[in-house]
Image (cartoon, rainbow, N blue to C red):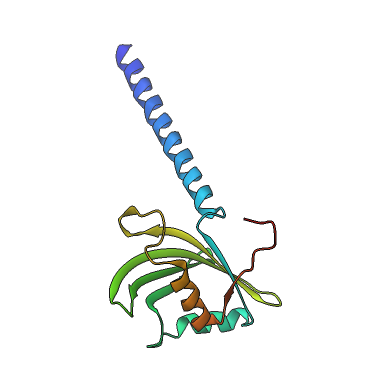
Length: 146
């Protein structure tokens, strides 16, 4: 009887640990999907034109990058090198394109190498990259919004 009780206690502890890990991961994803670490841009390019522009790598690009479509239809934008300085970077964004009168380009920061909680390069460099690549301008904040 004590052996069965021990097995049940170990199984209960394992289930408890699994549930706690699952809840922590859900909180992390919810925080990553929030406004924190989220950048929004608007461009006159159509959805397909945005995809074509991102697929076209040129020497004038600020970064070496990879834009890959995921099985769920989303995109991952992975920056690996800042070309002007030659500094390696390892920054990953979730990219979303919403078609309309203007295509809305949304970037959610996912991770930086070595666990940094924000990108190592300033937002201005990302703004310049997206302006050159997609003719995309940052979304203007309405008055009264932070």
